[in-house]
Image (cartoon, rainbow, N blue to C red):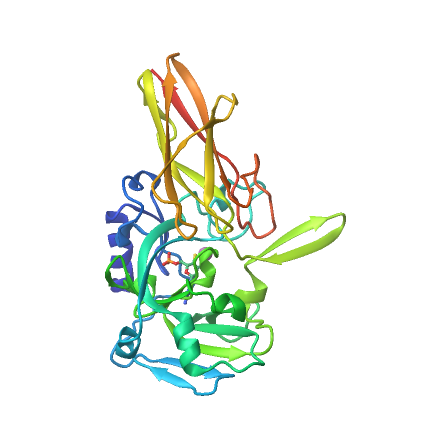
Length: 358
Ligand SMILES: Nc1nc2c(c(=O)[nH]1)N[C@H]1C(S)=C(S)[C@@H](COP(=O)(O)O)O[C@H]1N2
Ligand SMILES: [Mo]
């Protein structure tokens, strides 16, 4: 359809690396990640399982049902009239870095750019939960997007639905966001309303949200239990764990890989983030030499990536390998090699950047 292919065209013009046009799946080009903490919305990676629904904000409603004292039907204006909160949050697809796994795993073959940061504005979810009055028997909150389509193993179309444990849904930082970088949400990022769950891999941040249901059983929908879990074979046993908090990670944005640079001072820069805790250090190693601590730039915030940089003297011509490793306050750090799992999630291995010194 013409609208969808023009979305693909716009994404290419904005410098996104397009993986699929319909539905649009595109990652942020690493060299676009220069300067500030926030990514302009047009350069923010896009991951959608189904075609983007076209929702008319005049007719759209958010329904809150299930184990509540008072079911709610909220218009966008109702939400805008409630207390609002603005927060900088890094969203990362759990499949980010999947293309670097060997042997290959199924799913979108993301490089390193399925991650971006924006300033999100909306109503803290807890405000809506409190207005509805959650019953004491509740255990989970189920979020439904308006989008749907075919999914493997299902005869009927499935909707994009995910649940959060009640104690996570009640955290003050979980937002019902209607604005991104100070503008109404762009269509591909969930207009008119999306959930934003800081610290969690972005699958939790349901776009095109139109229904919230409070339940007292573990939700078992397609995107909850058929996919988005780590699966390992250990000692002949299959172990599974749901994809939740973002793993600690650094991303080197400068120098770009495979470029030639002049002898002298080489600026190595990038971003680092972790869902478990703020970043405490980023270390850089050249040609497998000792780790050198980079300088962290700006405020430490657990919900957002932060910049780091290190000036390296490079005086010998020839190829060099730069490796960067982030550590968070919980003491977690990046592994030397990816921890392979069957569905290819959470690859936070140390990144290597190769440059040629002239
Ligand atoms: N309704 C809906 N919400 C969704 C998805 C989707 O396909 N449908 N994809 C999820 C996944 S896997 C990711 S990584 C993020 C991507 O958000 P973005 O496109 O704004 O970057 O949205 C999540 N929320
Ligand atoms: Mo994702």
